[in-house]
Image (cartoon, rainbow, N blue to C red):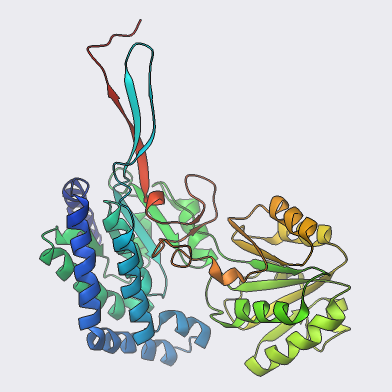
Length: 415
């Protein structure tokens, strides 16, 4: 089992030496070919995905998580669209980030270059297989995919299509490798391959992310769990706020950018909460509220644990606060530094919220569901980074590069 993984990693390292020197046109050719093959192989992809969905339902997986697993024509269209967007983006490799010339004529340039072998460890969502591959290829990196056992058939099918596209573009097929073993011990093996793997990215639930971050010997780009907050200021428009909260919670509740905790100013709570409950009751959203919330609407009583929970389900915790300062304090205490939003008509409060909240993405009058590489014009993302080095927020092409200094001299010597 480990021998197969090691062989894949060694093949990736060989492929990296080819891909890192490949020009933009060749990398674009592979992405364009992948786009066409995704369209041509819809039936094959949906058939293989149905095997995973069926098994998940047989195993009692809740529907919000099955939604993350399932493919349909719309989601295949979205993968194709991601290909088209990444295809049109500027290749970051070779970009001059900074430069200067010393008084003695020595010319120093700081340029972008690929990171190398990137391993991504992820759960459920098969579209991640395509998104991460696109970004890796365009930025000159090679990628080791370790998806969850629940999506194994979907990931095998997608990887087969990706390899076909690489072959037709005359790039090494082993630039993308899928770990087919579903044994969890493989994760330990991968995250300890220091010197062979240059970066590991855990993308999934808090348990997975924490495990990889705490145990890896390979550098980690930490993509955080999403305990996302929305604060409804006393000046907010009630009708519009209800629409935003509904979107943030119910559009796709199983994603990391769905809102999990709602904070409501005490002056607007009597108007907003009954209107919100009507919609949530229709859509089957369970509300867990503080004592003051329970005095306004019928709901379950929230516990301390609720403020710390990423539900990834049709559940939301609600707390009434007396001021924007109390809302900021709550977010600072419980946030995973993913995405937070304020709904307000007060400019001063909006600016205070923006400057006070230390998360990767902070919104004024918008749903947290926009925190996404595709929505931010990146075409795709390898994850949402909640750390501060070297990338933060949606991780796209530029974030998958490092830099090196190139120095031009004329037989210079240091004095």
